[in-house]
Image (tube, rainbow, N blue to C red; front, side, top):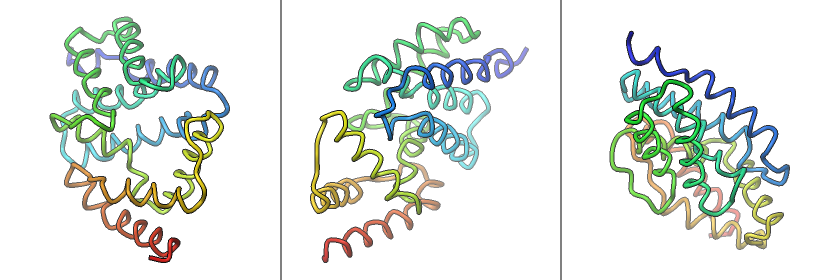
Length: 200
């Protein structure tokens, strides 16, 4: 049987989404089930645009579903906790040790400080920050601001928040050609809007 049909992705997806629905605190306005579904959809869209193979797409979809699952255990360093969850549950869904290590490396690539090492890692990075180039950017960014405020991570004045976002967007890059084509123009537009709001 072909490997794609062996891995039970749909079952993994349902298990993790159910877990997140029950365990993710209501104060996590950004790192919510909606974010996980958003990253999942973006990862598959970008992967298909990049002509990735079906096995790689399943790896990406699995990593996308799992990438913030560690939030149920810890906020800081949740990527490592997500990897621990992946290693614990995926053998029960017919994923081999090789499959699992690949998925774990993709999850780890979502750490901002990490440089993506291959195409799958580039895709998950672009999918995780897909919203930076979209029209709903300001809405989603505000969810992150509120989450940080509620959790005591950091609190911003409106002007400081715009300055923080301007620095982040200006320093960000999309790694895949398809994300650059679909999102870079929108991101530049969002940068210009922030500058307008700052009067720059």
